[in-house]
Length: 163
Image 1 (tube, rainbow, N blue to C red):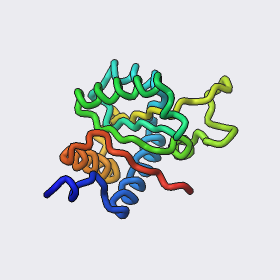
Image 2 (image 1 turned 30 degrees about the vertical axis):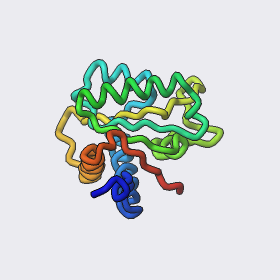
Image 3 (image 1 turned 135 degrees about the vertical axis):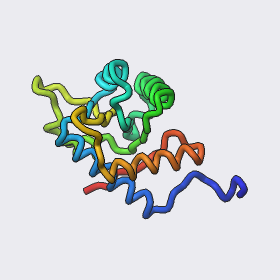
Image 4 (image 1 turned 120 degrees about the vertical axis):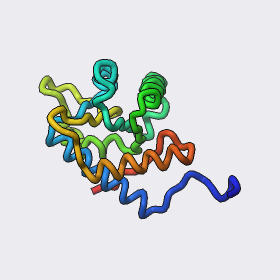
């Protein structure tokens, strides 16, 4: 295989399948109370119990690319996750991620009780303490992350389809 043969891209069908699986994982985790939302909240959770985290999702919109502080936080979170064998995904739409997690994404909703907007740039999915989480969608996402690492793409980027 030459460099030209490998560009890190996956077929559209595979990406659609992984995107759908990620949505299912997020919905199931939300119902079980296994979601941590926010860069600072995620950092605290990773510090306290990294073994309980099964997936880290970092999301950005086009305007976030210029936010140096956010990029530094992402770099540190990615390094920590790699060191602790936590799967990581980058998602291209913070607004869509907020919609999936019930945070709106439009003008209203998505806020904390005090009216403050939630930070959907980093989302952690944790494993419920009561039992081992046997979710086929999570296995599909974890398998995708493993295949990406095997292709030297440590933080794969996916698109969440608009609804």
